[in-house]
Amino acid sequence: MDCQNCGAPVDEGWTLCVACELRFAGMLLRLARDVTPLHDSLDATLHPGGHAPVRIQTATPPTPIRLDVLDLIDMLDATARELWRCLDGIDALDWHKDPRMEDLEATLIACAGHPKLATFHDAGLYMHIINNLARKVDLALDPPEQRREIGTCELCETMLTAGAADQWVTCPVCGREQRAQTVKLRRLETLCWDDSRRGSAAEIAKAFTDAGITVRRGTLNVWVNRGKLCNGPQGIAYCDVYRLVVGGAA
Image (cartoon, rainbow, N blue to C red; front, side, top):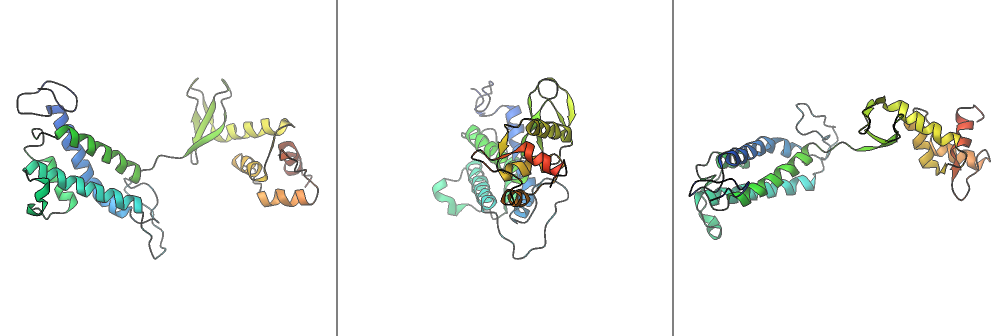
């Protein structure tokens, strides 16, 4: 017979190899550890970073609930209890005969240590389901950092991306390390020296502010109304804003 997960040969009566059995048990134990942070993350005022030892929570009652996390907990609970019934040989149609009354964390731990974890007939299927749930839990607790384009590499002109808190960026092509603020300033300089580059008040205000030169969209609109800036069909010229902001002509 072959392992239902990786295809490695296994002895008769086994559905998972030793390595996959350990991986399966590890995923269940990791999910058991994540149950408490998941319940904490139901609070919509909780800042992302559920795996962090210290999480910042604002004091703004009443607390709204994150419905996506609630749905995820329900799916995890239903899957864990279904897995336990399969391991114990309880028919899905006879769920009312299930004697277990433990909470979700205890159920996951019990499944991880069950002697039939690598021998029941649907082990590969449930391992795949648990693996998908584990990925969703990780995304709920630790959302990926939002990264956006900040400008091109000075050496190879590759577009670079950075998070809001990144101070340094490394080019994925040439490996050159550059200060993120310098990349943003260089991009702004390119926009301002080309008199054909235009944008909306919001786009220009964001480009200047990202580069460390605070410009408000409302200020640009006031300058347009006063005739200091021309807002044509293609927008406002970056160079005109630069002249007013940096050149002191405002």
